[in-house]
Amino acid sequence: MIKVSVMYPNKPGVRFDHDYYREKHLPLIKRRMGAALRYYTIDKGLGGATPNAPATYVAECHLMCNTLQNYQSGFGPHAAEISGDIHNFTDVTPVVQISEVVIENSTKELQS
Image 1 (cartoon, rainbow, N blue to C red):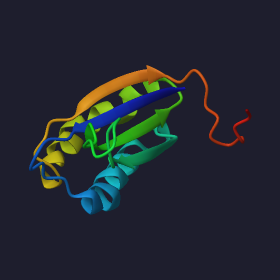
Image 2 (cartoon, one colour):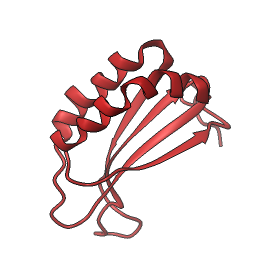
Image 3 (tube, helix red, strand yellow):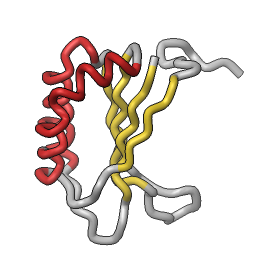
């Protein structure tokens, strides 16, 4: 499985509409990618590594796909439309990373 992380850097005065992101942008991605997208998560930055430090990213999403080819074939044909929607919720350019998921433990209790 692969994970595509799309991270929006935080900075003073950043504009980010979390409601639009959650209710419109990610559902748009899901509709366009269809079965190529297994599921997604959305993170809202709360803080940094030390008390009272700002979050490094104002928001992130993580797109989970079975393979890199699934992602590319599902996202690629709609990339212009999806990228064109970014201005509707933010004024920052996202950072993107594609990773191989080595362990996913979301359905099992963590053990000490």
